[in-house]
Structure formats: structure tokens, C-alpha cells
Length: 304
Image 1 (cartoon, rainbow, N blue to C red):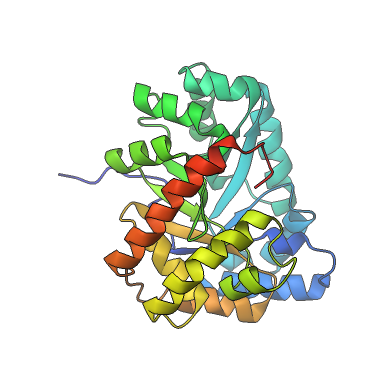
Image 2: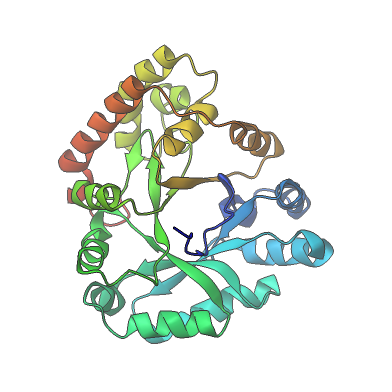
């Protein structure tokens, strides 16, 4: 059987997340340095217009190192079909690029409903591909947005146009609802995991007051620390990268940082990735099913 070409072919197992490149508390020089170090490594990048001036920083880095411009996943959307082109242009212009590898579809309002019902958005998605603005799409998922992708997937609307799904997936967070996660797994759908280390070292999340930006992460860290410690894995970063890649359909994990040493930890962890032991995965998966039912699917948008 011949392999059907996909826009995710050749994706790197670690993708550099650029959130911190828009952090003005870090000097522009330092942000450029980190961006260029990530470019030197050859990994894919993930970015968005809402990350401060991250696009402008990247645009400068790309102009200065034009032979090292990475493949990009960029957030696009939002609530109306006719917003897509403007959002794409707003993202590409600061980068000085004609197109992106993957558009991360952030679906809300009428656009989400149209997507769920197999509406006109799919024609627009194809038009944007034909015109060279995007090569493919992954659908962003949160617990509170899982219904539309589930309906579209079950109805077969995503076939041939959507290359996969992208959501927070780490030992403390699995942001696809249980029913959508099961559907994705049953169908062997491609997944890109986000927020690799769940916001920082798990011991810090558990032990340092205020380190976890919301209480539930601290509580989950309490449950996961013993599993991590018993695993024998040397670092939390390695543990998290291996966790994501222990699912056969997860092809990459996106981890953001504004520090060279943290970038190097991610880059080291992507080498020779081995799945975690099955017993470790079973324990964390059981927790994630419980967490999803108890909190995630009931959470108000953007409270997690």
C-alpha cells in the first residue's frame, strides 16, 4: 500500500513553541538568540499572532537567516469563515513568508458549527490549500470545544482535508474529552501534543505556592509525582516527551521556552525517544480519564 502524502510528513518529534518570544520581559536580543538556536536545530516551529510580538521577532530572525526558516504551524480561525484569510495574512506578513506548513484551526461560534455540520468552510480550507497559503490543517481541541470535532470526525467530514488534531497532552493534561479521545484513538487519527511539560517541573508545580497558575495543576502534580519518581526517568522533560510519544498516533510535542538551556533540554529529550513502561502509562491514563470527567468537561472556557 502506498503512503498518502500528508502535510505532517517529516514533522520533527519536538516542535519549538514560540510563546515566550513575545515576552517583553526578555530582551529582544535574547529572544532572537533563542529563536536562532531553535532554527539551527532544524525543528518545526509553532506560533500565533496573539503571542505578543513573537511574529516580529521571528520575522527578523528569518530575514537574518533565510536559509534556516523552519516549517511552521500557525493558529488560524476564529468565529466566521470570512475571517480566515485576514487572520492568515496578519500572521504571514510579519514573517515575510507566502505560506505555512500547517494551519491550526481554532474554531468558535458559527465556524465551529459549520465545521461540525460539514458546511462551506471545507471548500474554503481547500481553496486556501490550492492557493498555497497552507499545506494542511490540524484542529485545535479544548475540553469545552471537543463536541464539534467529534461530530465532524464521526460524520467523515474531516477525511482528506484535516491532517490531525492538536491539543494539550502531557502527564497532567489531556484536553480532548474522553469520548473524543477514544474516537481519535479508535480511528488512529494523527495527534500533535502541546504544552510538553505542563507548565514546568512537576516538583515545582507540586511544592512551590503559586508556581501552578491554577489549583488543579498543583493537585494533579501531587498524584503524578510518585509515578514519575518510581519510573526512574532522569528528568521531567524527558518523562513528558516520552509520555507524549508513548501513544503511537502522537507524532510530535510542542514545548515553549525563552531560555537556551531549556531549549537544549527539549532538543536532548527528542533524541532516541523510548515509550514509557506500560504500567506507567496505564496509571496516568486512568488519572486522565478521571480528571476529564470530574473537571475538564465541566470547566468554563479558558479557566484551565
